[in-house]
Length: 371
Length: 173
Image 1 (cartoon, rainbow over the protein chains, first blue to last red):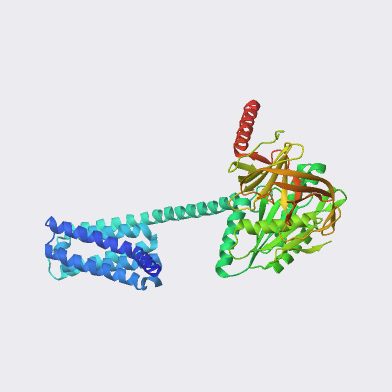
Image 2 (image 1 turned 120 degrees about the vertical axis):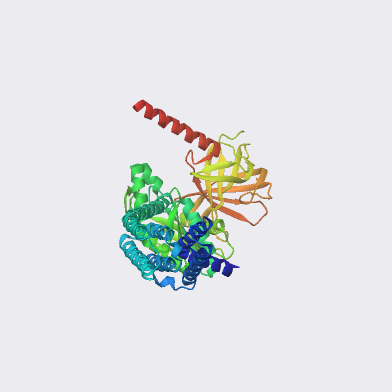
């Protein structure tokens, strides 16, 4: 089923690529049919033209479908399609000589598609191709002795030249507008990404906030279960924040929090996720890390945080933090794994703070280290 | 004796330190002098559950220890790693009502004995049911006013704050 959907998507993508060419061919066929219906050209000539146009459309789609068009850029591919269409129109002018009054309209239909997607230089080349091929066809008609009214032919030719010149000029404007639109779209996308990033951050510390952290933990648990890799977490608490707030004010507490989060985040790897669980409580998610590795990482956090200065409180001059570490067990949800890490944290706090306690496979707390 | 703090009903929405949570369980206890104490188990969809005790209008966070932690108890002292906690009081609590997921040892007990120990790192609580081997330890952390409020009160407070800020802004003009 998935293969079928992928196949359909691929065909739709290829069809989209061939659509400008096929679309212009379809419009031309409709114009021919209308001309036949109104008696401007013979029905036989219109049918012949439509068959030729359908064959051309088939060739465009086949080129896109079987990857020949993929070797060219979209603009080059469209350019090739239009050049082929102009050749076909020239052939139509010559082959069905009473089609002459209708054909200039068809050139304009084809050029309109080009104006929407091609730059000036490509369109100028295509206009030259159209002028040359159409001129050759008309010349061959005259040469073969067909009764071509000169005044009408020259007027048509001049009208085509002027229209092509205008289309070529307009193509530049359209292209600039398209580029501006694409740039605005890109900027909007980047702003959206930035807004998302800001919305997932804690305003004071700049680390991820609770909701983002929980979403990330759910994602990491699902990934760990899927790929069979370990996942460990650490519940981290900044020690003595209440005392700092009391002794030096909340502004000092905020500075301590910033220093703490900066140091803790620095101690972790790029793939680890660190965020604020609430208040002075933080959580570190360590993908592809077993309990042993997580204890080493937790010790690294503790050591790095311990080097940060603290406004003196109760004889302490450096920050410290307490950590509870647990490894995710198969089938365990976010609440259970956080609960075990938190139990380790509580034990570490009761045991004197500024230490790491890991919860082993048997559920027993293991003191990792303390100064 | 009636409790002085806000009483929460099972399944009530509350806000604990800014985190929206739900009362998943409640135990109503009565002390020897008739004072009422409530224990709440708060939970949300993702985070770890939280146990709160309310007594005499004050809330305290009961931080549970690892299930398999074996603390050394000698006479009236409990040791957690290098830290020692000394017994300062014992409460005998009668279980009056249990609803939802009850925290701790009170699920099927009628009476629980709660020992309060003090140490340099704060207060430790040890609870057991007379006659049963199971015992539970908590690190007790008093909550600041406003740490736990009902969701209704929380939104009313926010609204009032917003109104006050608006009025201040108007006054400043």
